[in-house]
Every structure is written in C-alpha cells, then in structure tokens.
Length: 182
Image 1 (cartoon, rainbow, N blue to C red):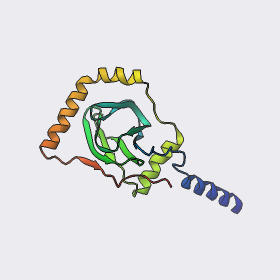
Image 2: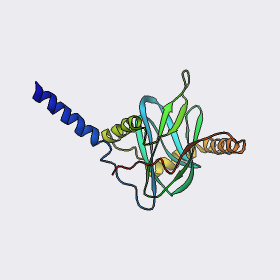
Image 3: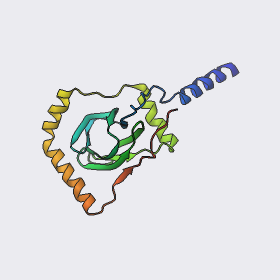
Image 4: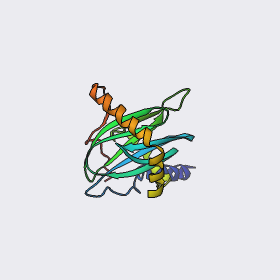
C-alpha cells in the first residue's frame, strides 16, 4: 500500500511540475497572448479581437495562441456584450487572458488578465494547454468571419474609444504579467 501511495504521489508531483512544459516559447521579436476559456460553454462562441483584427471565434473549454507585435494593444471579446483589456506587451514574452461567462440569464463575456503570481489560476489554464492543441483558423475562415462581423468590429472600436475618452477604468494586462516557463 505504501508503495502505491508513493508512486501516485510521484506521478502527481511530476504532472504538477510539468504543467506548461509543452508550450512553444515566444519568438524573440513577437509577444504571445493566450486567450483561454477554461469553463464549459459548448454552445456559446466568443469572438476575440486585437483592435479591428479578428483573432478567432470559439466556444469553451479551448484556447488560442496569438502572436503579435510588442507594444500597446486593445484586446476585446464579443458575446452578447463586449469586454475590453488594454495591454502593453514585450517581445519574447508570453501572457494570458482568461475569458469567462459573466451573465446569469444571458451569455456575457468577461476578460481577465492573468497574473502568473496567481499560481492556482495559472495552473488551471496551463493544464488546459497541456490537454489540447490551440484552436487554429485558416486565412479564409478569418476573412469570412471578419466580413460577417464588420458591424460588430465598428461598434466595438467605437465603444472602446468612448470608454477611454470618458476615463472609464479598463482592465490592464501589464508588461510585468508575463509567464516565465523556465
């Protein structure tokens, strides 16, 4: 019995410390953002954007790995509502944004920057990354979805602009919130 417990503990500890080990490092000249939806929600698709650029659309639990230029970004997601995150990211770094359903009677999206110091939250997201590959989209799929969402993109950019002009507090993904998997 003791041997079985020791073996189980070793397997558990190995899996705990190997979380996130399959992640591809960020290119030296790009930042990587993982948009992660760890909760259930098979029927509800969220659309993810970098300003006017559609990153992808998917239901949960899934994620997308997005490479972008370093510097400031306006990330947002659309469901029945829109939620925004201002970001300032560095080249060669990996960042996480979690998407969650926030509505009780509706399908609302909430975006949350993940601080890697929150080890419990980070471990939950990394386990999802280790279990399945990133969602991918062809250029044609992104082109078609962008055309379909043209009005949504216009409204989203306008809403974000108005919020910033009014001085509304918008969540921030800071340069220091990068994940170090070394």
